[in-house]
Image (cartoon, rainbow, N blue to C red; front, side, top):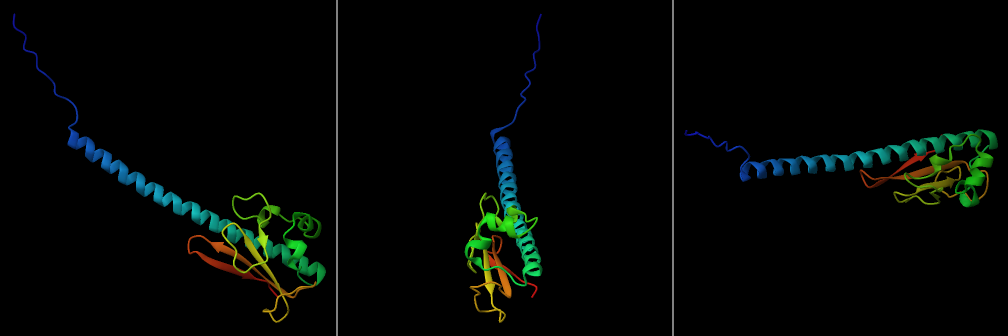
Length: 154
């Protein structure tokens, strides 16, 4: 009795496997690259939202005190913020992924800082004594690598 056994040659060739690996690699690179951009945009959005929140809190302070605070020992300390800005969200005074107040007296903050500059009525001279007539808040935008600012309403 003779058996005819047919051999099934199933499987992939090395060329087919290489093509699949290359395609998977290209797709992974595209996904990782676009994910990085999403994270930068999210941090930029958080900075913009924080800046708007801080500006709103400072406008309420202005209404209560007929002026804005100076920087030194005030807006850069959580204790002063809690005592003087009722209902203030301390997280708005922290840059993304930081646990401490990151406000600096500078018009050129880094991505881990916010800048606050109190100004006299002319809008260009730094204010050193309460009450201040105007302010500018600055934040660093990662996407454009530029410093953006928000002015007081007055």
